[in-house]
Length: 259
Image 1 (tube, rainbow, N blue to C red):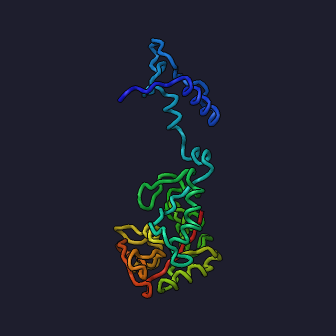
Image 2 (cartoon, rainbow, N blue to C red):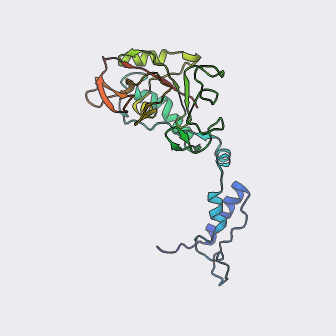
């Protein structure tokens, strides 16, 4: 691999950006001419000796990153691929256009957490612990005994809030209608999850997160590719995905954009 030459303009730009953004680096030792010095940093090549630049890149803590980026971001589920047709209000494509895509756009430059394990974050959530799933006050009591909302679970990785008691065994259209009309816990922005969102709370070995009250076949807002008279359900025990006729009933959980 060829050596990279740093020109005067590049050095000045680096100095200006680092000084403006952090106030911590005002004099990069990168130079534009080889001076024969024994100081390994005084040369024109970017390498492991350029400690100021390397230190700047790697020194931000999680708290500093949050402060710099303006808050914690969330890994909202990627689009499922149902991108061409809104089969009805409240379905996969409709909620992606109106809720999840704008959330991803607003979130794109924020500090997003990552997972150490399925249920453990690499960095603290907004409550100061590394639990991926918590109740509404940052604990693990979902029955209201610690003043938390009953049956409400926050996923601090995806930014989604879940009502962990199913709202019935319903056909597809009824599932969406009931989700949109739900006022559980005084929230009025519930939706039926799409397949990506529902799979995100199903551990492929252990099944759906234990706070949920059912592991049966679970309804999603995602329409099957062909025939479109079918929708996709997720098996809450195995995580397997398959199609089913929209006229048939499936267990319904609802979710909302919490953050």
